Image (tube, rainbow, N blue to C red):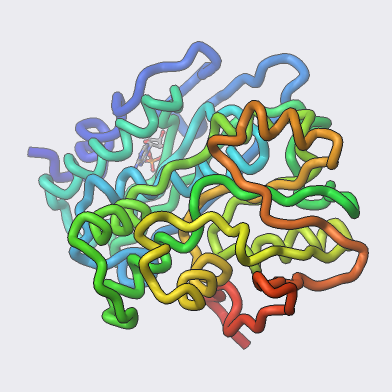
Length: 321
Ligand code: ADP
Ligand code: MG
C-alpha cells in the first residue's frame, strides 16, 4: 500500500503513460529533458483546478483526471500545437488509494489518446489542487496567436456553446428547465469531460489568422482576439451553435449561456474570407461561422431582427473588480 510521497509517485505516476522517443529523461531526476523536432518550438501552458472552485467535491475522480488534462490540451489545440508531454503538481489532503487510482485512470486514458507522456511533477499535502502543465510543439511562425486576426476575417466556433454553463447552473439550481434525464447527462458530460479540439487546431495551421479556446465564454474570449488584434467583432446570435438540449431552454437564456458561460473548451478562430469554402469543405461538420471581425472596437451581438443584443455579465473572473 503506497504511503510516502515517493511510493505514490512510483505506484501511480511513474509509468502512467507510454514513453515517447523524444523524451530524453523522464520522472525520477531533478528535471525532465525533452527534445523538439527540428524547426519547432515548445508551446507551454499551465492550468490549476481547485476543489470547490473549479470542481465539486463529489465529482468522480476519473472524470476529474480527464478534465485536468483536457483543459491544457485545449490550450495546445488553440495554438495549433501537437501535444507531447505534461507535468503534474498534485496537492492532496490525504492518501486515498481509490481516489488516486481513479484519477490516474482518467488522466492516463486521455494522455494515451494524444500520445502524451507524463514526465515529472510535484506531490504535496494540502487542500485538493491539481495543476497540469502541458507541452506541445509547433512551428513558431505558424502558431495560432490571438493577435493575428484581420478586419473582414470570418469568425468560427467549433461544437456547441453554453452546454457546460447550463450544466453548472442546473447543478446550482439556478436554471428553470424541463430537460430529460438524458439531456442533463449530456450537459454534465460536457462540463466534466470536455473534448479538446486538438485535431481541428492542427487543421487550422496556415489557414486561421487567429484562435483561442473558449474557457470563459465567447464574449470574453473573442474579446481577447479582438483586443490583441486591435479590432472589434460582430456576432450574429442566430448563428451560434446550440445543442439539442440547449435549444429546449428559453431562447434568450440559451444565447446568454452560449455567450457568457465558460468551460466549453471549444475553439473560436478567424479565417480570411477567401478560405471560407476550404474550411466549410474540410471542417464544416465541426464548426460554424458566427460573425466577422470589424475595424470598430468592441464585440457587437446582433439578434435575428438585426438589432444589437444586450448581454448581462461577461465571462468568469476569479478577481472581479
Ligand atoms: P525534487 O525534490 O527534486 O523536485 P521530487 O522529490 O519532488 O523532486 O520528485 C521526484 C521525481 O518525481 C521528480 O522527477 C518529479 O518530477 C517526479 N514527480 C513528483 N511528483 C510527481 C507527480 N505527481 N507526477 C509525476 N511525477 C512526479
Ligand atoms: Mg519536489
